[in-house]
Image (cartoon, rainbow, N blue to C red; front, side, top):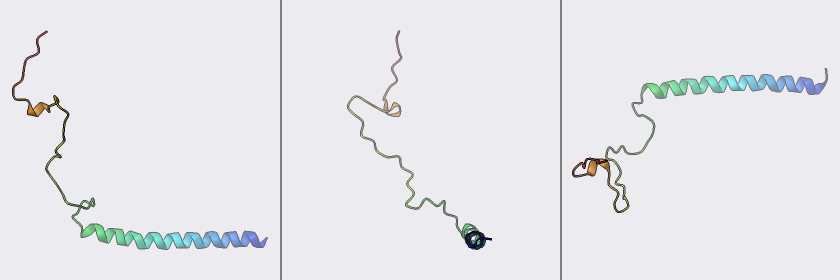
Amino acid sequence: MNSLVIDLILCGIAYVVLIYFVATLTKSKIQRNRKNNDDDGDGGVETNTPPVIDLPPGIVWPSDEKEKTPIHY
């Protein structure tokens, strides 16, 4: 066999072994973090108030209308 073929086979085996070790190490770390964490993972501060949106003149939100006017055809 050519030395290039032997090198490619050895590199492929080393790649498979390294991927196996990385997968097993990260799998245990991910499972450990999921057990002790109640956070949803988005980070930051939770706000429950809707944003204040500055609308152009003459535009109102449907919930802000004072009285509903019937539509006449």
